[in-house]
Image (tube, rainbow, N blue to C red; front, top):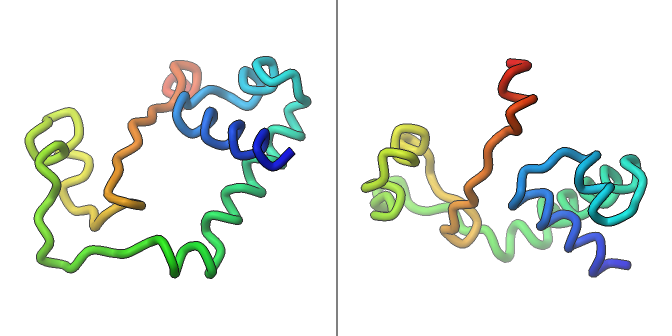
Amino acid sequence: MLEEQLTIFLYTSVTGLSIRHVGECFQRLNGMISKYFKKILFAFSSRDIYSKYVRLPCSDAPIHPTIHNNPKFFPFFANTIGAIDRTHIACAPSSEERDAM
């Protein structure tokens, strides 16, 4: 059960699909997908995990070359100060969400 919840969280985070689409993929109700996602998100942001695994860089730390040299990323990350394990996860809203803005 925990493995499925983590899988749903990661799949949703990486693909950027809607809850409805993820629910169809995993054959779960939309409410369950939302519940699982929130549960894992809160676990990752809990004090125990956050304080152990998240290390904010120093203010003078250079921007990673993968982000700095890519015009797709750098304009949007010009003033940011890090991410979990220095990994950038590319995500974007769906076309329906972009049109709604």
